[in-house]
Amino acid sequence: MSLPRLRLAGAAGQLGSIAVTLLGLLMLTFFIGRLMPADPVRAIVGEDATRETYEQVYTSLGLDRPLYEQFVYYLGDVLTGDFGTSIRTGQPVIEDILHVMPATIELATFAIFIGATLGVSMGVLAAVNKDRWPDHVVRVLSLFGHSMPIFWTGMIALIVFYAHLGLVGGSGRMDQFYIGLVDDRTGFLLVDSLLAGEMDVFWSALNHLILPAALLGYSSSAYITRMTRSFMLDQLGQEYVTTARVKGLSRHQTIWLHAFGNIRVQLVTIIALAYGSLLEGAVLIETVFAWPGFGQYLTSNLIIGDMNAVMTCVLIVGVIFIGLNLLSDILYRIFDPRTR
Amino acid sequence: MEKTILDVRNLRIRYGGSPVEAVRGVSFTLGRERLGIVGESGSGKSTVGRAMLRLLPGATITADMLRFEETDLLALSEKEMLKVRGRRMSMILQDPKFSLNPIRRVGDQVAETYLRHFQCSRREAHDKAVAMLEAVKIRDPERVFRQYPHEISGGMGQRVMIAMMLLADPDLVIADEPTSALDVTVRLQVLNILDGLVRDRGIGLIMISHDLNLVRNFCDRVLIMYAGKVVETLKASDLDHAQHPYTQGLLAAQPRIGGTRQPLAVLDRKPEWLEESL
Image 1: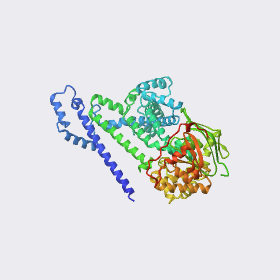
Image 2 (image 1 turned 60 degrees about the vertical axis):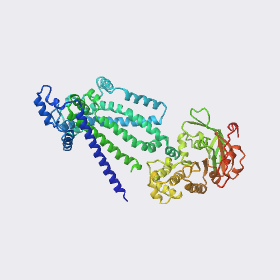
Image 3 (image 1 turned 30 degrees about the vertical axis):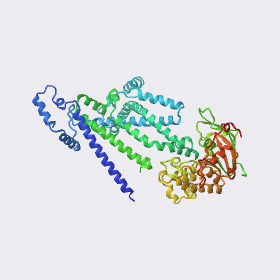
Image 4 (image 1 turned 135 degrees about the horizontal axis):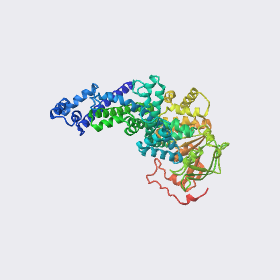
């Protein structure tokens, strides 16, 4: 049979389309970088530099070349892993980002875990009890999560759970006391502290992580809840659900053994997208909780016009979304026999 | 008709929020025979079928009597009802394109009926399912067992449905338009399989259909429904001698091969049919 060959061709086609998307993304970031009203030369030489210095830096950055030539150079740099130097920190941009990314990944992963669990279970609950009180309660909860400004809920949560109740850690990734105690091996504090065998640091980090992650998770659960509810209602109206009931399955069994399997594909898509936007960085929550993450990094560089850093950040966000799309494509094939 | 399987008296069904009843005082009995329920769309024939299984979410079912063998169906709790559905009474749905779960293997869906009602190993349920697939004349049942619903044809899908619903050896099967979604060419084949199994196993059958000819050929008795009521009950062989003007109208509205090329009679619905009591 030619089935394996077909599958191989499919994989090759997918790789090709990823390459094209990446090229498009690089073009986009490059031209956005050039179109931005920020002056990269001014950012380096400062306001009071002489005309000669300005010209010199202008030439050394290659800004006097035609745009397409600049793009080819940019492409070459990116492909060799050279994303330029950050003006603000003087370090290679990629190193800066590798430094802030783990904090965001840690936060986003915990948040999406909370958000997906909460969102999916509330969505199913609401769909199964459509127009009865659990549905209304879920609606109010998700509306609240969707519309409350997160910096406000963040502060209120800090006051209540940290200042008053003392249940969780405050801002930052761990208590002041522990900073610098474990080596920065992976950048993931939870992993690093475990590797170093410092359980105190681990618990402190977890304590600090739980509140911002819960808030982010709650806010992203709002969308997941609403979508889960509508996906589920759609499936519950299908005939195969009646078939399952006729066979003697209970409502509960029908929902979990039959209907739920059919919404997995759609759930994967929306959860992957929600995860993507969390990885993009939650600037507001990172600010409220003094969380040294990607969102803060991107925003502060955007404000001072550090274009090398901004372009790389945009590129990384794009790559994250491409990766998540690829992941959900793979999961589709596992979950839905019709796509194989 | 030695023994009554189903005894329905004055069945009334109202969907939640609706001011009128969808079924208004339907009564009939069923032995080990094949009963056809015929009527146009919205006459309540499918509603009656689903009410037997108590699968009408949001609807209120009342009846002077709704007895299935020795069981009062209306007195059962939902939990007890789970033991009736699929095991003692089941239903064949209309379109296998929608009535099979698209992401589960056909065989697993058939075997599920058995696993649900009997204490047995997966292996045993698998063997039962394969044997049943063979009984509905599916060639290479082991291979079909492993296929997904989108990989099999409509006729085969409906045979899978029949296998699934007869696997636990029920006493009553309700077939809700079992062949309406199928190509004309496989319709007869599927009906013959269903008919053979129902006869061999002595299963009571309620065939819900809008196809008078189908019911005439495959049923012993026919119930004609109009606007939530039974307007006439008669033997299938006596269909041509129907007394009620509605039945006569339905029969007259049928085209016949080789008949005259006159425009077909239009059904003239009389308002008094709505009021008439049996």
